[in-house]
Length: 307
View 1 (cartoon, rainbow, N blue to C red):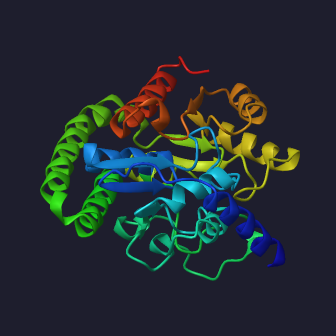
View 2 (cartoon, rainbow, N blue to C red; view 1 turned 180 degrees about the vertical axis):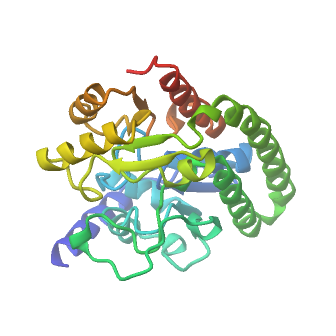
């Protein structure tokens, strides 16, 4: 606790010596780049959006650097994935930002998981001995574009509440985003019909919503427990399962190590599909473009053209 207070004090000092820039109608900060892309689609030119995490970072482990607290100090709205995904790094940034608006429970704080049809909600008590298990449910819901639309609706409602003069714009942008996603969704599903019913191995438990959307079955994970690196005995078990179940593809995010996934994929054998860990928001990628890239990687893997 003492170290947390010291860190918060350092963040606060950094905030106090930084002048605030000219304001947009609404300044939005999101924990994840996927959330930033959805928020920007809804807010359009009425909002300034900053993502704290990069798509190349495992969202469980983001460095709580002082410059991230500066963004939160200026924010009117903080949008998080929730479900304890950011619990290891975001609370200290909120505390150090010296901005009561974006503290948990206030109108400037929005937990996007509230709007999602949750997967993998534990039915019994969980603890750290089980690995990085999320007691409220799986937080990787933005892999499913249907959940992306649900999150966009929740964001629009909060933006309209905080910035009523631009509510009509936010509603119009939501309608446009919804139409764009739903139109693309039909093509995505058609291209990935080969995944329906297919056995898949994944690195981490990020496939729950993707599986629910596309209809494949995740038969094993390269991590023995969520957040615990692979070990030889577990990999031997995964290999046996992969061969017995005739696994069609091995899937991992690009921020996880390559070695074990390549080994397992080569021994089964099955294509290894390396998927993007999030929207490349800082370089202008949209949420629809992010899902299109994800679908393209899966499509290439099914065709045997993956890594």
